[in-house]
Length: 279
Image (tube, rainbow, N blue to C red; front, side, top):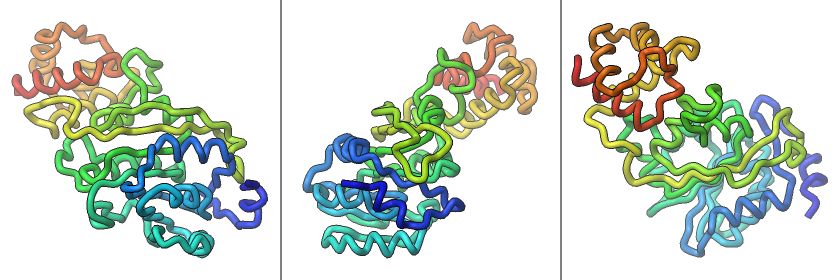
């Protein structure tokens, strides 16, 4: 199927970050990775002109395509499938919990400039224990920039620029894996960067059991607030008292010159709890 010829007749909109996936092998990889059964409801974010959509509707009980571009919606309607529901909406303003009964799987080829806000919208923040969207989702198949994929799957041993707030947000509520790195030439028009297909398997409970999740969020934000500064100074600059910091670091045997990006998610959780105890 010649996706390139079909895509080039559609006037893409740069303001919407439109880059249509035209690689048939990658489209198949998306469908295969979702492991769709006849009982599944798929929510597709950024359906575009329907190249992935037309494959999803072959296997799912229902596909709910969320698309912001009115011109793209005209193309989606041409699929004329009984199990396709098209919603003209901004995903960041859409409550997924109201779309259907039961659980959903999410497939998303999203504008890269809103990747982080969309992940927050789907999973919730680390202290959002009852997020309605996350409670609806079993897994997410997501196309992102390759650099973002590395950040989502990083750990404290990764290069410092990779491990950070996005890492913790992604991994706190989901198991994250890179399925495949994707060349920029797989899209039309071709973006300036390569991409990656990522799978997030949503957890029923947060990664850590903590007494205060809002405090954990504060601690994490403080720890990564100034990457060139050590953990002691980052916490000081975020309003923690020196004696509280010193006691917490001593209890956990953390050198005060350690940088925040060298602490695992588990250690950051322990640090948050220790700081709570000393307040």
